[in-house]
Figure (tube, rainbow, N blue to C red):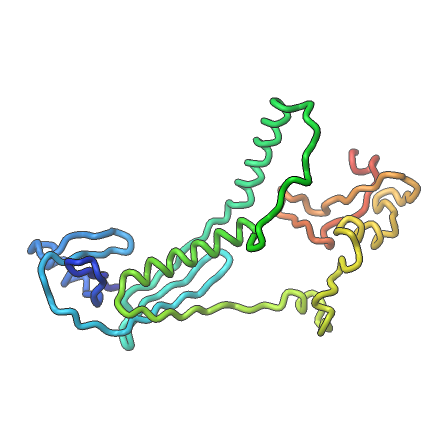
Length: 234
């Protein structure tokens, strides 16, 4: 592992060895600029021979792999762990918000048509992952001269994993195509019949999670079944 180096003006130079960095700090020819990644700043003028530095990024859902290298040497490499608590934090936030509103505005009529998501909206967990990736790209690019970025992105065809025969317009016509939402698709799939007691004359039907959200279940239609009110509350 190498140590990143800045000149007196705060511009990046080629990284040096750890031994060289210790000698510079001991002789007061450099000072610590930051600890992570460890970076020093020179306190004297020096030559500025620079090479191209390649930054490699391997994105993932739980970890980001990153490395900085020249043509023949690896300067820095690491594995960044991404946050996995975004969803649970939002669930907790929603519980507190609803409890607070119920206490303070219990007689207020519900409002549900006065909100609009921006066009570039992404789910918070995905947005956090993207922000972390860009943060480390910017950080590593600022530590080396002449940065050249390489990003490895894993491509997975999730629709083809579910249905190997999918092709063409089938990608636009998913399982819930033609239905108002997932609930109506689940009702039609189960023939408007409770999957617990087999009754179909109940006026009110509900969708029930086979695996609870608290246990890691999702809102996918494969995890939903139709139940009547009596079975849903029992």
